[in-house]
Image 1 (cartoon, rainbow, N blue to C red):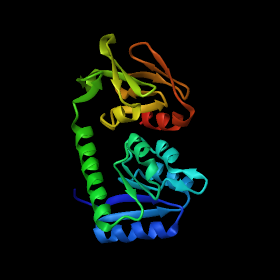
Image 2 (cartoon, rainbow, N blue to C red):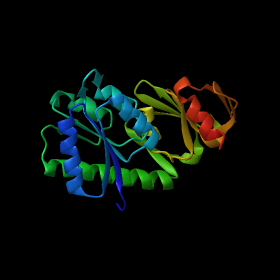
Image 3 (tube, rainbow, N blue to C red):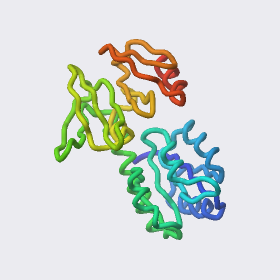
Amino acid sequence: MNGIIRCVAVDDEPLALEVISKLCDRLGGVDLEVFCDPDEALAEITDRKPDLVFLDIEMDGVNGLALARKLPEGTCFIFTTAYPEYALEGYDLDAVDYLHKPFSYDRFQKAFSKALRRIEYNRGSREEATNIVVKQEYSNISIPVSDIVYIEAMEGYSKIFRKGGARTLSRGTLKAVQSLLPVDGFIRIHRSYVVAIGQIESFTKQELKLRTGEALPVGRQYAADVMKTLKR
């Protein structure tokens, strides 16, 4: 991958941030910002949308797993922690890797390389994708992106509503399905809904009306982004 990789590291221990900074300097080609305050970090990540986030789990008064759930859709992140018991839950959140402190340069480099592959794949596949492949029961289903009207979250599953009334129930979170979709073609409007922008007929801060005649709620935390995006 060419160009500078924009990264953010979040840890309540300044020494841990210093270690990550030195490792990134050794890698080269990394623009790193560091934060001891998770709230400040989340605001910066939401605003800047960096390529990669290094995220501690046990921070003073804040759990990194909870913070990971608040990251913008498609954020690529690596957990860095001294607590190995969180590894399984970390991977369930779709973390690229899980670095157990203290970690070596070689281990850090390996995790960084995995992140680069995912970033590159996401950039290419989301810009060019005409179909997405999702798991339905024990089969893989290919769905044309142009066929999708909206997607609804359903407790670990995602229901994909398609043109003509067809529906596909996929094993996977709403966040995971959205990560497969073209960035400019879909928008998260609610914790439970992602919508194809081309299927929106009208909108307010509280509700969207689709060309299919359905109405979907706009979540309060998504309203500003919805209005900004759809008024372009």
